[in-house]
Image: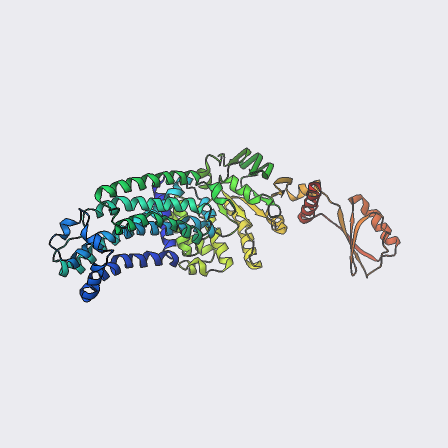
Length: 275
Length: 310
């Protein structure tokens, strides 16, 4: 495999995709909401409005959560009042699944533009006339979707860490974030989801030859994240370090199986069908 | 030396045979045309010759290589102008060329020089750093041609190179094709349904219908083999009425003012035709037999093929 060619193709896909507003807008808006807006709201609003804060902690749905905090959070909440406990609960645990949406969303939107979009715009034919092999073309495009998804997730995590600590320092009095449960989430599950999103979109693109069609259909992957989100709210599932490693392993297995399936179906004759 | 050799090539999409028992060769420096209506199998042939498809049966050799297993090596030595320009419209002209040059594995310094040369040659240097989306159709076609020539291909494939171009741009493309052979000795494989283009540019043509070869050869060879009749132009001094049925040798008669166009079966019928016209009092000034054009041959063969299909 010619690695230089993979890199050339990935760079071209980035230059092309990042001029598409349908690709760029969700990549800017979603991280801003997850990484800046939501943590700032969770920290600042209770401080500005004690009544609202009191109403929140008195909520019958929140009470059981506060009374039965998962073990991995208790070292961070010992000696804290209710208001600060809520900050740790929301920012240290509840928002974590949002970081699973970022790699999925980014990898699917770029992969949809790169695979289905190239067919839709009929640029794929010229690409197929280059000396690159089918496998080089496939992995060049996988790289083009995988790396930005990972980069955006890791970059967002860095910003989230800074925002959370800066915004909560005067309330908490110490730098408390990140907590260990986040490490498998960011460095083990997120890369797996980036690959899963890419491989799934490639498979979808074979039957949906338009960028929007492929992107919208690949959105069903968010369903994978919802059980974690609602499971944590309901106090049924907690993403501990062990659970994170297990869930990540399962996602890696599925992602690699889908990638294998996608690379087998990726050949010039199929890509040209209907062109 | 043959740059392309195809023998008994068959390509099927499911049950449908897109190409059926096709055999031909293309020599070094030759301009060879595939002629046929849409759906005849021209684009499929180009894709097979570049290893984008695997043939169902038959053998293909391009520059001595088998494209179905050595496709990368073949494509490194060919250039293809696809039917639509297939350019990245959000990128600039220079970004497009740089990407394809790098995919071809061209060294950076050589690629830079080659890009500058081609952008200049195709009169695109002033717009090289503008997005392709802002280009006219003719400019896009010129840029796509520049891309096809980037790696100095030994064989240049041109799929409908003048489709959708205005007459001036079409003329430029035809001049370019002629100059390529003259200056570089490149083989050119042209797919077209514009018969005058093939007649002007090509050494040999292959006429296709529904994936089958109807005829192949130079224009002279085809004129000898497929003579659908000899047209004779008879210039009269003034218009003269020739009653229908008075010309027993004539297959068809067309009259326009003082010019008669009469089709007879053989050149040997012309003296008798002239004698009969003179006998009918026609004031003959000039008599000139015309060889059948590629267009005459093409439509005769296509009509025969369609009749056989029915």
